[in-house]
Image (cartoon, rainbow, N blue to C red; front, side, top):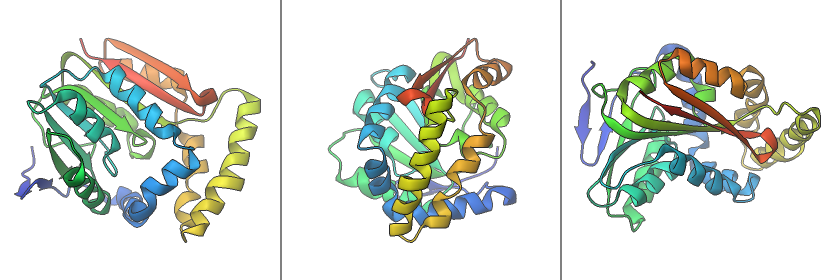
Length: 248
């Protein structure tokens, strides 16, 4: 296990492999408008989907929870509301700019739970085996450089009998929904990003969706990673999905 440093209320660790550096820089650049764009482009629905992921991860009151690829902190803040003042939440991301936004948001929120924000690699987490009572991940699995390795790492740090819930964009299986999604990305997402000078940054969405395994394949990968139960829930017409994994 690699060493990591502690500064005030946030952990920092640089474990990002060179082949993911461009992805990290992308999320650093979009950090200032990430929340605004997500809310705008989803018509506020992303918060409902995130609440679903939190619920399906079954975080216990007073538990220790992880939000992996936490971005600006939405899921970590939701977890903190559930575990309460006796719980602990860790928000992990490899983008220092996203973590800065998350920490600022946590300082102005009304939650009682202390959240530790850590800059680390999702493929090499600085935690002992079987640390967490629940794990969430929002819009991160699609961007890791090795999905099976990430799922194995989630399995490693999750306690036996506990659950992880992974929310992400998906390419719908229905041809009509695929057409709608392509129209949505081309006519709404990319122009909206262009308004903020982030055309190239958001143009990656289409190619990343094409490479991302569909729900049934994610279930297979979950079982291969060691999880006893793996269930994929398609939402928003199949354009979103939540993979729920339970460790034996």
